[in-house]
Image (tube, rainbow, N blue to C red; front, side, top):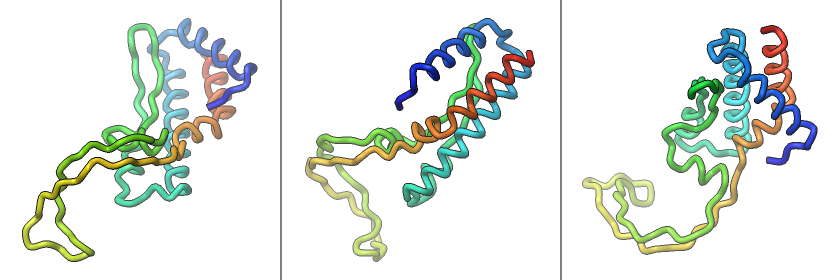
Length: 154
């Protein structure tokens, strides 16, 4: 994600103000909640637009959470509990090791008993889809407005 130097300066000043603000500030907690909802919603829109829906597991894993670590408070947005989310976001180019796979269907027909098969190592290249990073980029000015408003009203 590329941020202009002006936006970077604003983010650094906001970060300094957040550190100086009382961590348990209700106004700041509400602002972080608004930011979390905004980015999570945009991320889900991006997942739909990029056709990353098969079972809906990735889409449903997108959440936000407020956190407090020492003096620092904030919001995390991401795909929690889905191990392939980083591969879809950033891509993958490498070798998948040999492994065993449990199959329940063959050519669309359900097997009477599931079978374990050996899968040989193979090369795989998946391009990153940037659904989360793009959400942050699309909504960055609104995020800055929300945080600015919270920091000036406190």
